[in-house]
Image 1 (cartoon, rainbow over the protein chains, first blue to last red):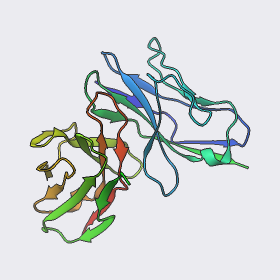
Image 2 (image 1 turned 90 degrees about the vertical axis):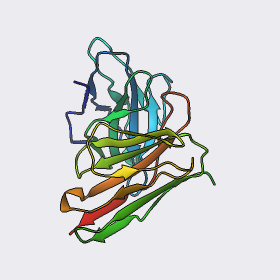
Image 3 (image 1 turned 180 degrees about the vertical axis):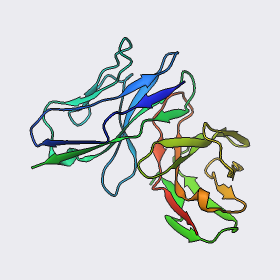
Length: 109
Length: 113
């Protein structure tokens, strides 16, 4: 079955600490993976996608096909990173996204 | 300004009423989507459209229906609302190429009494 798992509902860190939000997926084909973010009182928006291989707001994510993971990392968390983060998978050659349940990141001062 | 709009933002209504949730986008996108999200849960795709007169059901079975008569407009209708329809409904759109980012609206929080 196709599935995206985010094991942590809540992740709390202090400002300046490293952050890793976990995402594992189950998909037999070639997945396209995304991280979406929702800041307080804002819309859900794209943070980054694995095919771009870019760093956005200091966040990076590497697709590990062996471990079927796409963890989101940032070396030094900032208070403005506090938000809800969703990992999502798009099945090959479709735009039908499968979302994880999300992880709420809280960054304390 | 190019954007995606959903109305209403909140709707509280009685059982048995017919409801239409509006979604319009001025981004020139061909593809549009409806997701349903219960509190603390993942978004589930319930409908999608790749263009005018094209609509398909998503992964989660829904009693709602959609139409796509115009590129920019993708309304969702519930003919007879029930308490089980209480949820948040999110509309999104994306460009015609595959695996482009989806742009989301603000959502409609629907409560059926």
